[in-house]
Image 1 (cartoon, rainbow, N blue to C red):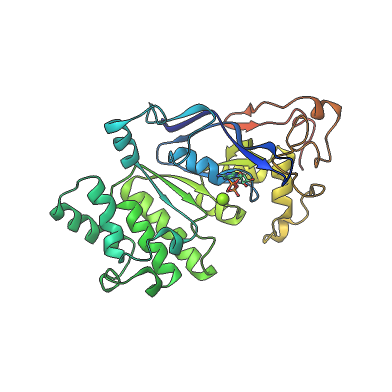
Image 2: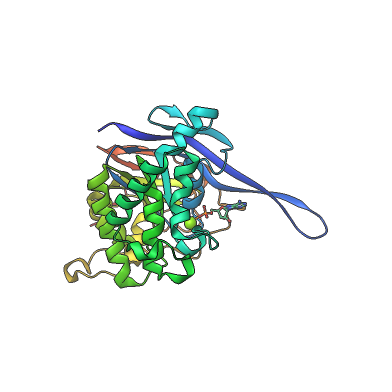
Length: 326
Ligand SMILES: Nc1ncnc2c1ncn2[C@@H]1O[C@H](COP(=O)(O)OP(=O)(O)O)[C@@H](O)[C@H]1O
Ligand SMILES: [Mg+2]
């Protein structure tokens, strides 16, 4: 399958002043030398604890922030060098659904106005706009009677359906979904996840699905990338990642999630020591070195590159072949 999106050694570093009297500039490496690609038609999951750089990665892809180094290509076109019409065309191919629908819909606009806005920006005719709104609201099961209401007059689930409808009106190719179900009630979460799967079939969509919820990943994703402290530490097809995680961080994540299947409860567990360090003060060498039970001297000395250890399975750990998981 061909790649729709290629992220090539991208870095996003934030420089911030710290300290009240003696100002010191600290660098936060939110995304640090990350490469991966998303294949057309797949659901690529991005997982990792909060603060690992997932939202910054999403904002880079959507060109809401500029990278410190290197670039991202959508359908072969560099998104950061694009200007004018080519930037307009790139923007039309991508859309986003954020975690908090109330914050992403304009509180002073009706749902209808929020849906019309991207269509106006991209100069879609009034007739065609009306048709598209009718179609997408039907697809996301958002009742017509809700279109003239304001966001606060809708439930959380209805608001998220409205955000999804808005993300669909321009017929994007790639949708970035940043924790799109995390703020919803559990019963609504499952409905929205199934809605995403239905929409993917209907519109041939590709998703970047960001979450910290491992059961959601397992349900919806085809391949998964695991981020820790701004680094991509492992990439694998979802079944493989759960059956044979090869990075100690991924093993730790899987070990700390509740196991519903009793047959799997006896699996070897790995627990990471302590809390994640500050991004402004990361450990020497490998990003996990300060918490990894397997770290040796070499792990503190060098940053391990992400290497393909098996077909489609990439790991950034110099000791992964010694650490086998039963
Ligand atoms: N605009 C910004 N200015 C400074 N630091 C930022 C900014 N955006 C994100 N960060 C920092 O980057 C790190 C990664 O954040 P984020 O990408 O939101 O992670 P995640 O989505 O995985 O929780 C955090 O330490 C966060 O404080
Ligand atoms: Mg986030």
